[in-house]
Image (cartoon, rainbow, N blue to C red):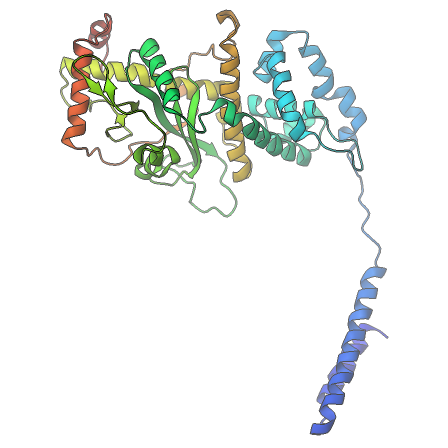
Length: 437
């Protein structure tokens, strides 16, 4: 009996007038007919033939073509013979690549189920090339002879593995007082700014608008973005990062609501207590930032340039600018080496955050490995990155009103007095007279 006939039979029985005593038997009959209707419908559905896929894998993405013509095999073997081209292609030398692969292999290696999976070396090569070149995932899929959907999954999984494997090794997950004191010594030695535990800045990372996001990521520069807030040490390595705030978020709340801002404000980062810089000056450990950040007892910013500055204030602005430029260099190198930031990133919001996390870890990983190499072999950091036009990020803008107490203002004045007198460097007068600080 057809399923339509069952429905007509049920409808006819429902229209019949029955006495109270017959209602129970009618309900039972209708229930049995309805169950028979469902069984007939299920049998009809099972009798339909399954849809047959036209192709399982396109011919250009087969394992044979991938082994013969894919960049992960043929080109990789040629690059291993030319160290400079290997670094240009992957942003790291073959020794760093092998070390990174050994760390990630337990996580990104797949088991054989139906087909032979893509080996970890190719997965890492795909991810590094995507991040370094800034090409679309489809372009990378053609180059490596791997399907675009698979490339998308590989990039997300490998970026997450890079973050999970390297974050504790290259970032300050749980900083101690000794960590901050070592960073402070580097700042004083290299950039002549005592008691500085880091330079901070925030950037808008331009992205393609996520689906159904409305204007949540729409920023003041008429583009969509995710905010990257980061603190950098004296060697241009990132120490603390906060990633993921939507671009529409007000500038005044970005730093204050970030994990870095709340950690500094509530003294959760184990920052050392104030101690003497010299015989006449006891000063707290501070972070240096630009005009976008408010002046506090843990944040030093320059004197406003819209006023007539005396020589003492110009000395302070020069010394602070000299220490703060390491964060601009770090962002410049990050963008210059990982060209994924050169244009809007096209991916899901979750994958974009993983991409930013991975590039931050790779940046620190490579810089850390280069410290043991001769200066002539520092290929990753040989970039002139001082120009903001070359950084590829958008500035955050002013972070609220510049309201501060007299005690904080007096703290900055005392440091400015130190820079003019006891803590002066021989070349600062020439710099101040030849530049507008």
